[in-house]
Amino acid sequence: QNLDAQSILDQADTLAFPDSVVNYLKGDIGIPPGGFPEPLRSKVLEGRGLTPVEGRPGASLKDYDFDKQEEALKSKYGEKNIASKDLLSYALYPQVFEEWKDFEK
Image 1 (cartoon, rainbow, N blue to C red):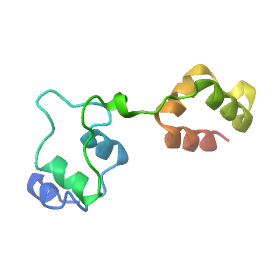
Image 2: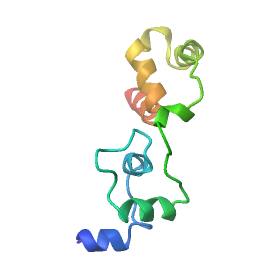
Image 3: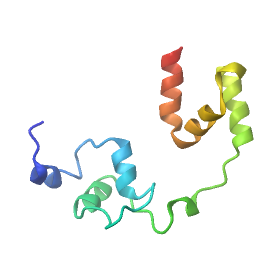
C-alpha cells in the first residue's frame, strides 16, 4: 500500500488495522515493557472511539462459565467435535473459533 512509518502515523485513525492489533494497542493483553508507541496508540484508539485499558486487563472481565459454554458448543457443533482446547480457543477468540468451525464444515 506504499505506506511508510510517517504515513501510517498520519493515517492511524482511519487505516484498517486488524482487530488483534487494535486490541493489543488497547491493552487487552497487557502493556509491553516500555509502554506503547505514542502517538500511534492514541490515534488508533481515538479513531475507533476506544479507550485504553487501565490496570490489569483481566481485572475488569466478567466471570466466565466454562461449563455452560461447553454445553452450548457441544450442542452447536456436536459432542465429539469439542475438546477442552476448543473451549479455551472459543473463550479467547470466539469469532475466530466460529469462523474456523464453519470452515471445517
